[in-house]
Image (cartoon, rainbow, N blue to C red):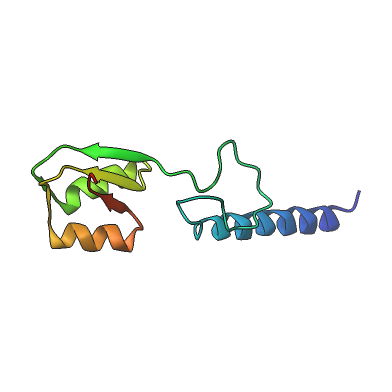
Length: 101
């Protein structure tokens, strides 16, 4: 058995999957996925996870907590105040902040 060729093939496949996974980070959260990923996902790669925060003031600490849960969209109350630092954090980590229509 040619272990060197086998190792090279494994590394090549891992690198392809990592590149495809990196491409999914640039997906849009609405509609269909714009990435051309070869990775098969249980769910669509662009599916958003939402969470409602029912607080009067949303801080960076709150957004750090929801990001740890994999949340990409935070639903805010009509009169919820979002601190500037929290808004910057949301922008930096692509967390969408939505208010009711």
